[in-house]
Amino acid sequence: MTNDQLVDKPALDIEGAAIRLKPVVNHTPLQYNANLSRKYQCRVYLKREDLQIVRSYKLRGAYNMMSQLTPDQLAKGVVCASAGNHAQGFAYSCKKLNVKGVVFMPIPSPQQKVSQTKMFGENFVQVKLVGDTFDDTAKAAKAYTLEQGMTFIPPFDHPLIMAGQATVGVEILEDYNKLGEAPIDYIFIPVGGGGLSAGVGTYFKQHSPNTKVVGLEPEGAPSMLTALREGHPVELEQIDKFVDGAAVKRIGDYTFAICKDVLDDMHLVSEGKICTTILEMYNEEAIVVEPAGALSIAVLDDYAEQIKGKTIVCIVSGSNNDIDRMQEIKERSLIYEGLKHYFLIRFAQRPGALKDFVNKVLGPDDDITRFEYIQKHNKEAGPALVGLELKSKHDYQVLIENMKQYQINYNEINKDDNIYGYLV
Image (cartoon, rainbow, N blue to C red):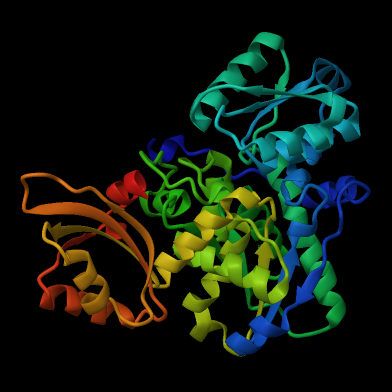
């Protein structure tokens, strides 16, 4: 795409969306957080979209668009493609508007998300599991929409969707202005396709122009950052889908047209840091956040100096976190914190080799969490997959020095994503 093919920046009817959504959505709280404020020596407010009816802000955009369709369009029905929060917001909107909806989801979608979508949509929604990847699913959904003469409700790239998501910003300023305090210095916004950041960013530029608007993406899916650097949306070849609510291969054309003007900064957050934040929020605040919902809090360490003494708002975008993922979240957090390491070790095939490793190489607080050993005949060394959990990240250096001292033949595999993903 060349610059002359870029779409024009669309106008957003944010005030109209706020009126339409008022009787439908929860006006979610803007909460001062004492622990985070103390930790970063500033004033931290959390916009709790995790407490929305469908546990994410996505209901706002879906309902705003669907409520403005013509009676004829509504009679023919609506379609969406989503593996998560958009599907649930769409399903709830179908029920609220008494409209027939079809949700296309990838075949590997977690059963919890399929069940939630059906629960919010009740008899108004049909779920079709099609395709192995989201791209396959979206293609099938769009083809079905055309065949049936229905209306497609996109997850982010439409002015009515963005205007709906912008009402998060309307509520933030409505609540904050009642406090009568100094203006908000920073607002941190998760970015997937860019609908939330485009909408909220637009509203803040109009009504709180001195607030720095910071967009946040996971390191494994830097669609917006890449687009901003290239000057146009780019389809990434591969993404890490772990932060499912913010992992898209390509941001929208309309969202980019707005975000390039309203985002003051764009920042990447590592998936491991996001996992640590999810666990901290659960253990310290009893707040359940999904990976995308943790982005705005996970980034605070990187902005610690800039935000000192300032007022900041973090949008907690959702809480649709499948309990089955908690083991993976804990694992990624431990690896990020330097407390979990996986090695392929070729032990010498002699009696006592394993005993020496445990007694001489491992420290007193090092814990073996995984051990798979294959003895190979007629060879000098047999490979073992060894997982170790350390008490402190400083123990790692001692461990590596001991490996070298006792001439242990090893490869650390959590530094190689491909081998790690295959074996662990």
